[in-house]
Image (cartoon, rainbow, N blue to C red):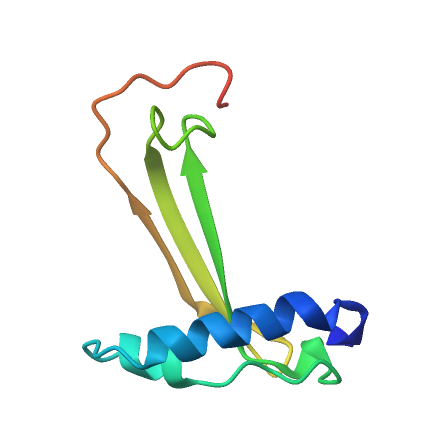
Length: 100
């Protein structure tokens, strides 16, 4: 199922990860950078993933901030609601109507 992605960007990502993996990181980052990417023929529905969600007050990282973040695990195609987490991040900036 991942085969519809062009292999060139995936190969570039794999090469970048190989360069990063040569550096020493604390766990769990070392495990993350040393885990190989899925093959392009892998059915994406069978992959274990963590879905991340970030709420921001804009899209410019130079000016705007992350207001909250959340995640949930999907294992064997099943959303594990017990793994869901959500954290509010204190922000000193005002929330505008543009970001709502």
